[in-house]
Figure (tube, rainbow, N blue to C red):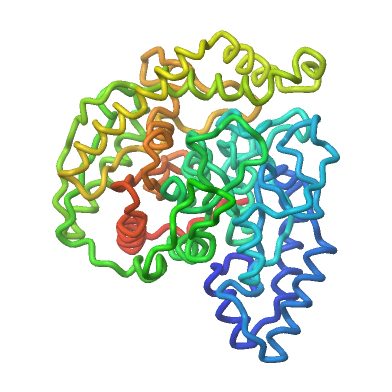
Length: 465
């Protein structure tokens, strides 16, 4: 068995008794041992626990018991998502020894579907920044070029999947944390609609904007994961009830006739010319698929100030009690962000929340005309690991979030959004195209993603690591 099989391929071979879950696990763990020293993708490897789960999965197959749709498939989980009986740190020294008594809702559902947990993947502290480094475990590196960041904050999971260590990483996305590492690592990353996957965030700060979703090498693997993890749970009162139909079946949906909008810059972003050229070409692919593609400028205001004000205030509410006593143990950028939140008044916060509603109305009105909206996923290419993100792009000075202007707006609106590999630069770096859908139209985003994957396949392109 080779390490690059998809989740659906592994599940099918296990179901047909052509491979055993333990054989799958041993191959993936060997790959993990080979690449993790260079990448630092995993902060916890649970080989012994995984072997017990794989043996149980094997016994269920041999006994002919009912098995789940992803039975025997290895899974990695971002270290902000709680895992019962396994250390969950959030990338923070403050939680270095914390062992939760319950799984995150999505983790529990995936384990019930037969997935085998390999371990926890690295993140920034509490996921507060969109590249992957933390005081506890250091920086994660990009399989395409280990001098560079894989993005973040679900960068450990993306580095794992991109290097062949399991077909599925479960991540979170509060401002781009699934889509950015998917773009930097040449993978598919899906941020489902807000509430599609129930979530009781253990580490506070990202209320109203956090989403749980998969990072995979194929669109159908992500859809299969979403079929398992989607659906309401009263422990998360913003969660959405389960929809009729299968997200995996939605991948076969016909995209001919879809009204597609392409915006190179959302009207305000500076974008690396290499990224623009690749993404424009990718957007053109939708015309060959029979879609009506229109170049647009939505005319929305840049919501960066709204987003930063709201999230800083929420981080202050969640973590200011830890200051100044625990300050030295925390990431300096996190401390600065919490302190910024302390300067946000209740009036400022509530005004920011109200402006999010105004922003949503603009987006909703615009998308009455279009089924999907396309744009680059990230405005800059992967930058050096351990370095700050660029403050200049295409010769223009940009704001703190100017390198990721396309992702966080859709955390504010809660729309489904995915990053697909649009292509690679001449230097061999992946570039992502973002596909954004109407409210709750996850099935349309998956159909568009699968059609693009069929027209412009990427899964056989692998890093040399």
